Image (cartoon, rainbow, N blue to C red; front, side):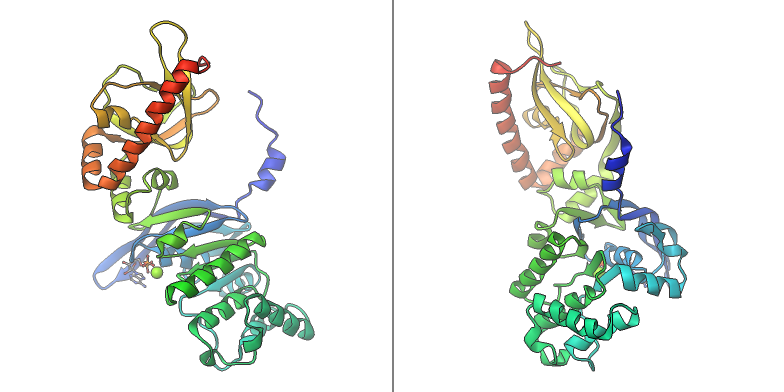
Length: 379
Ligand code: ADP
Ligand code: MG
């Protein structure tokens, strides 16, 4: 098979951020505490990424490695080709000033400077723009967040939502490609939080890459991609997507219980007529669902891609496999598998998941039936 020419695709798909083998161990009076247990991740230009997870899971620790506010114990964070752990303090400050905008939960505007001065300061510190341009640019950014009328007020004289809007405008002052925000709406009422979130969404449309830690499930639904952190590790996103009916804690537990499996192109994963013993979630690649008929060619009834699952039919219905599942030609497949006992326990513990699976099952049975009557033969 001729591989596609790597050049244009490689340019378009060059990660902005590459995190590899990242760990953070804090030394505490009670001993060493592993806050991040090995994170590997790529984030691409223009992505709107939500970092979610329960309190204490390691979100801020992780974010602080991306901003260079703190340093990893082991591993690397490369942003735009620059390895952050390799920079000294001066180099880090210089790099951050030009490449990164940071928004904090508690705004952290300088209290003795007016809003417009708070925006001018980072441009001055980074030696960007002329004096006149700085003020014009600061005013323009304040207009964008609807704060032009408050420009000459001190932070203490405006509301929390206004302070956070000013802090967002400040993060944009040096026009960085990347904005990182740790619970930027955590201290705001829900209506204000929603407006702030809309500002971030607009910034993504304007071409920024944004990583935002959020506690809010409604906000988490508005990003392009969520990274769930549990106990200092990233839960596979496609596992999380497939089992979106579960809460963070249940997901983290399942993530610890699944067995990783890989199959080569064309390999059969489950065979029609056999007794089901596992539930599978597709983490990478593509699989074909094929119905074998007593007479005539097998029929391809469905194709699944990452974030989808199969194998629940036989387990839920306590029947034999209703279809054969094999890896699509020219693909390989990475899967997470749960054995029948673990699957049954999960469905009992999380009735919503049971209902989600049953709904999918009914839809698929209908579709399979329709397609197996009229469908094209499988290749
Ligand atoms: P989150 O932002 O998800 O709430 P954090 O990253 O702040 O979580 O913390 C993750 C874990 O690391 C927590 O158990 C926290 O108590 C611990 N931790 C964070 N910072 C330190 C520190 N400086 N020293 C020791 N332990 C820390
Ligand atoms: Mg935090």
